Image 1 (cartoon, one colour):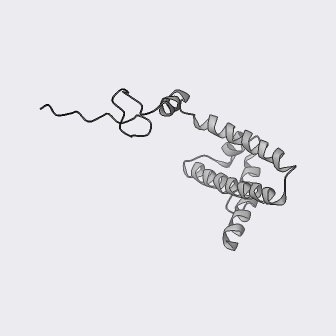
Image 2 (image 1 turned 60 degrees about the horizontal axis):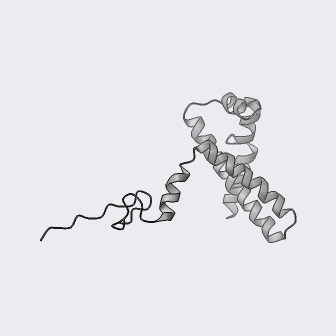
Image 3 (image 1 turned 90 degrees about the vertical axis):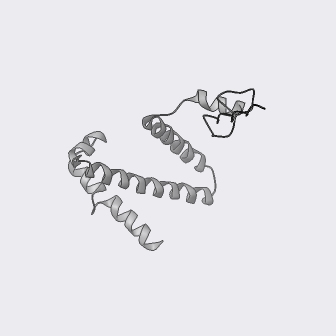
Length: 129
């Protein structure tokens, strides 16, 4: 009796593929593979559009949704500070960060530096949590 070969895993989710499929276990995984991977730039542009839409939706909503939007902003502030620290650690100057965001290096340092406005706000939130 011949040994059966193991079924190949789905290239998307890793589940075993049925006998009649070669690369994907389901139509859903096949569709996911056709969507393609998004670059960081595409992902961040999409996130910016979603945040803008969220603001427009909350404009006519209730206070609970407003509080959720504020929490999203707080998470974004923390992510920005983490990115700034990483970029500065990789050798980028305040002038580089300012130029990338359409401002001066001094303004970038005042906003995102260790003693900057955003850093103080995030530190205050973290201390009260």
